[in-house]
Length: 313
Image 1 (cartoon, rainbow, N blue to C red):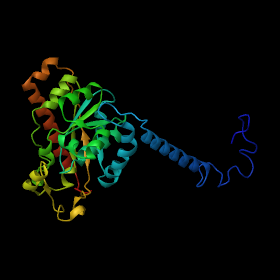
Image 2: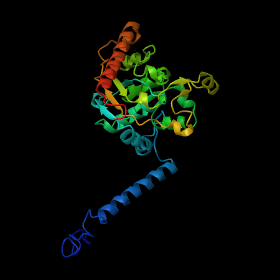
Image 3: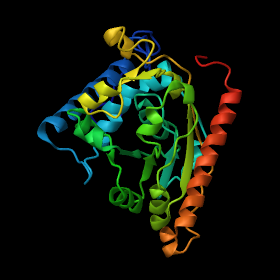
Image 4: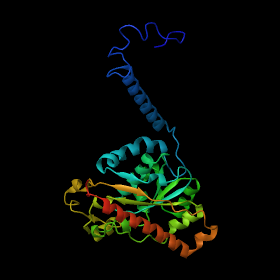
């Protein structure tokens, strides 16, 4: 306590009260704990007030940093830490500042790997950077999902948006396999699909941003896709309709992912600032760099699989 003139209150730090269990700072029911709860409650109420009154900021892409940090990451963190027990390696290979393009493999029937990669960068990078993911058109056609994706910093997978983000110094994530990777059958797990036409390399060359290869192990087994109901997929306007050992046979229960053990490894960056500005128009260079990134990811996947003790442990 403080006295009227700012000095210690009478009796503070002396007598029976000083050091007694009930009044000692940090005790089980002491002021320290009460102050902690008070601060949390005040912060929570302030957060709600800002959401209700609209006194919060979003960038031109719709990214809501406060909502992402305080709500969306908190919802994903139990999956990351407890359910999938993700081990993160090499995250320091992502620069502490400036633009960087993270290129990763894509798998698992449901795009949980993209979300776990976002948590890995946010929670484990020394600078606490945000990963801005490039998502497929389908994501922004779904109700609720579209709005949440924008709030989390995701944007349409197009060259213009990617270049604008990299030019602003953001960390951008892309999974060039697209639906070919995420919807491949279980028998082709950990075999990288085609990386498109190398558009991500052209974007990196234009913005002179380093390319950081990323390899994800564990996602392939969360929803083992043993079949594809193509007719039903066409009726629903989906790229595929997965059939797994549990879905749709067990109903909503079959939609739960298996609790596999994950590893996410970020490799050494491939610099692009040493190339001339017109290099982005050289198809042979783009092909070579695309192949280099793909091979790095594939070799790392094989190395991680060799070291893995079990799918679940």
